[in-house]
View 1 (cartoon, rainbow, N blue to C red):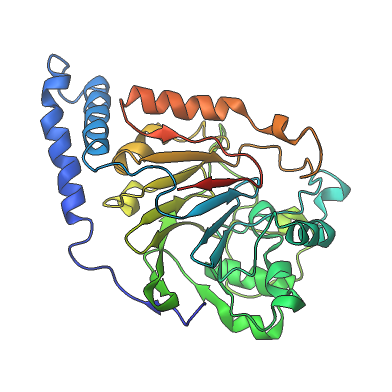
View 2: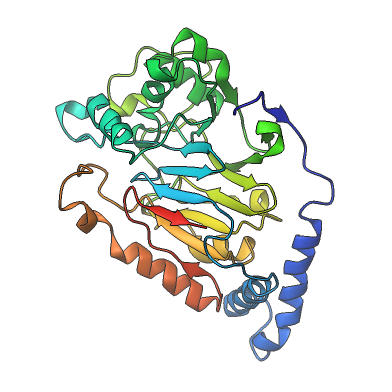
Length: 352
């Protein structure tokens, strides 16, 4: 478990053939867009749909569950990945406190986290905790998890940007954990557990709503004062992560509802966890994402609950926004993909 990760650049050929495949698919789809004016938005969208659809059918499809990887939605944008006695967390926000109360005062619900662990609804310890960005609903609980006395002797790495490292230290990391925060900016390719799995860090972007901005932007170059409110936890750059389990499965996870296409070019994940917060200010978010990834086998929506209803409250399932699922399905249909939209439920495994 958790040997020292070594940064290993991807082989020079990785992604070249895949990009070629997508380009070839786009060229091969010329017949589908015949009669549409070249260079027009309609032509571009039709070519986009044809390219993604053909790339989506290029690879053989494996039955769900055959890879032996389990994804468990932790609510908001959070995920637990489990396979072969390895456990990983992505954006594990579990406290679900009322962020509108007390001026947005930060709260860590240790009782909630410990109950989840005691009842087996959360597994641990994780070997790696991946942080997409610094906002409270992504980072708030990470120091608590890293500092659990019961896990003190277990090696746990956290990955995030320079800003995220400063925020984690400001919230309060135990001394023995401070050297286990791996600073990343996108492009890093880590190998863990003697090559049992890799984590590729991808530069990404935060969501943008109708006013083209987002809450608490900014970056840090030094440790700030102890954060007290949600506004103190700055975005600090946004990262996506692709976890690849040997040659069995690759999972790409987003914590922001946005993308940088050139950073995703050549990636062909089997499963994509798609953040579904407001993206009114982002041009053709889902169509661009699904196309550049070549039509993944599975997409799973996330970040589409109310973020505050407790895990044991009966109304929790009703806080999941069904329109986010419908929007994903519509994007898949419009691109004529074979992609399956898989709907998650809180703290319930999805087998891949």
